Amino acid sequence: MRNAKCDLLLLGAIFLSFNVMASDCDLTVSQTHTNFGTFSRGTLSQPVNGGQANIIGRKTAMLTIVCPRPEHITLYYRAAAGGTENTYLLGDIARLSLIISDAQADGKSVSLVYKQGGGVASSDNLKELPLLPDIGITPNSNDPVTTLVMQMTSVAAVNDSNVRIKEHKTLVSNGTLEVVSE
Image 1 (cartoon, rainbow, N blue to C red):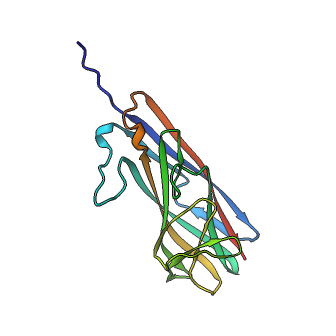
Image 2 (spheres, one colour):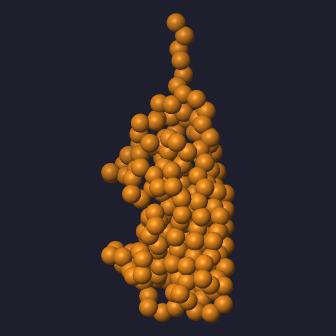
Image 3 (cartoon, rainbow, N blue to C red):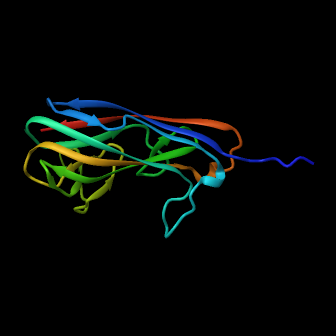
């Protein structure tokens, strides 16, 4: 009898495009393409202290928004939402979380809040927030800024029901980072 080896091979990639609306602000991202590499089931993470399981990889990029004049800046990510409220689809068997942190507005550390529609959504005054579908992230400040720098951490994870897949899969997620300024 043959011993069948069941490895999960994945290649995960994120492709970001940029859209700046209603302003002359420029958005730059240190890594516009993120490749999580090839993984087997044995390399997937196990949950620790209620944390996320089946993590394929974690990558970090820096976002820099520069405006020619002071503006109120909000960042959105437009992509297909994943199975849970704070994730996006990564292929057909995985999900992607995007976390914004370490924000600096005009060189000063600032906390972040969610912005939805015309006003600030209810959220705590935090240094780290996940980018949610159709909800923006903005500095918690009434002052307009000319430069906003943030760290974006991308976390890719296989859905629990798909950890035993046997074939090679290429997982791709396409999304748009959108800057809206007022």
